[in-house]
Amino acid sequence: MYRLVLYELIGILVIALIFGFLGILPYSPGSILFSTAFILFLSLITNGIFSKVFDAPTNVESAYITALILALIVPPFRSTNDLLILFWAPVLAMASKYILAINRKHIFNPVAIAVVLTALWLNDSANWWVGTPVMMPFVVIFGLSIVRKIRREDMVLTFFFVAFITETFFTLYHGANILTTFKTLLLSSSLLFFAFIMLTEPFTTPPTKDLRMFYGGLVGFLFSPHIHLGTLFSTPELALVTGNIFSYLVSPKQKLFLRIKEKISYGQDIIDFVFTTATGRFTFLPGQYMEWTMPHEDPDSRGNRRYFTIASSPTEENIHLGIKFYPQGSSFKKALLNLDAKSQIVAGNLAGDFTLPSDPKVKLVFMAGGIGITPFRSMIKYLIDTHQMRSIVLLYANKNYSEIAYTDVLQEAKKAGVKTVLTLTDEQTIPKNWPGKVGRVTPEMIKEAAPDFKECNFYLSGPHPMVRGYEEMLLRMGVSSKHIKKDFFPGYI
Image (cartoon, rainbow, N blue to C red; front, side, top):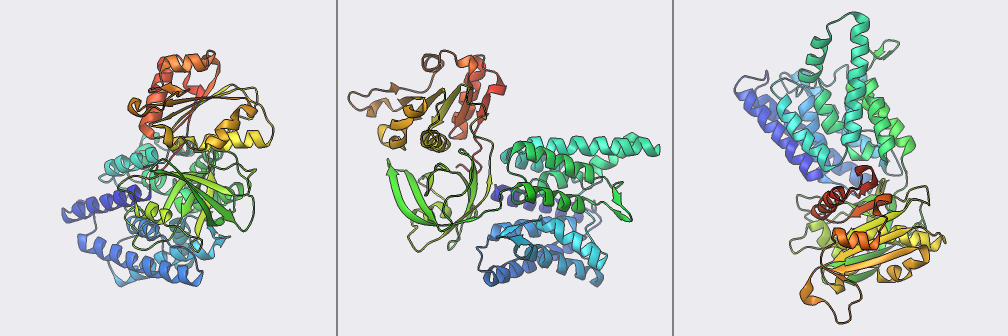
């Protein structure tokens, strides 16, 4: 996710340089390059200093992203008068991550709070120069791919809807031309870049779908320049900072500093990492995920942060994390594989809606592939430990027998009313007297395991192509899309 945002910001900047060279934009390539290099240099230096002072893990990729966003919204260098904001914006943005933070969780979007502070202190702020008609198509193309990657379509659409409704009201109230207002809003304002790039920043958005939609609506309402408190009129960055306060209030605050206790291998490439935490158990819902940060030497372009689903239950003292490894793995996964008792990994930003329904009477079918079993392991273990019974069918597909993970929990699953159906897809490696199914999950297999499947809610988890295939199959079987829930695996590969 971070790599995608970084590359696409670079792409937007390159296009701006080309348009500057052609005279389409009012800024020369030299001006844009100088400003970008200046902001990048200060961002990296400031981030490095604060990370050492606060003894906090640093993410260089995040610093690059913050710097490039600033470069695209702060006026490029034209005279020495511009140096003040070019200096203070990156310094304040990086400082805010460490100073304006509680329990190492920063409260505000770094870019937004930086330009709010420069506006109040220096009377100089962002002009959102990226929001021009010629840049709009590229911002939309790149922005939509980011929103799709991080599954934030609902939040962004809510933001757009409320922003347009609010502007429509004020336009009609003042008797202005509504077509002119909409044209300006879409082609010559910060709206699109703001929504796709800044609103979606994961550290400062709420953890669940309903809260994110409210957050999007709140920021969309405050986005209107007609909104004011006395003489203080709203700006995009002020709207986002206000939304960040709401997000912080409704989001989990805890960060976990974990050390490895045990590694359990399943097959050749699946490992269950068992971590201990000095703070003991923490509160979460079975099926939720966290962002895991692990500083390591020479991180590759994929950085030192990943999102992984928690495999353990809230009832357990240790934290389980199930990971699949690939031949050409990232530097993050290689470092994870080499974890020892002296190493520390940080987990935070708990989020996710892939959780058990509140109504225990709802019939469920869990469909897992490979390491996609992790959220179901969390849910089943929770139901067992809390002595709950639910109507659940688990269809769990693996390539071969050795890859079946968490067999200890699966063997006890019937205590919670779970009917487990295992299937192996590699027909050449089926063990003798195999009691399960053979081959990929089919409609017939689903109907046999859950004859009342049209009355069930389906939970799908695993590699994205598999989840997409299961969803299409269920839709063809007549299952309503409202009864299909997919796990969110950002950065799964």
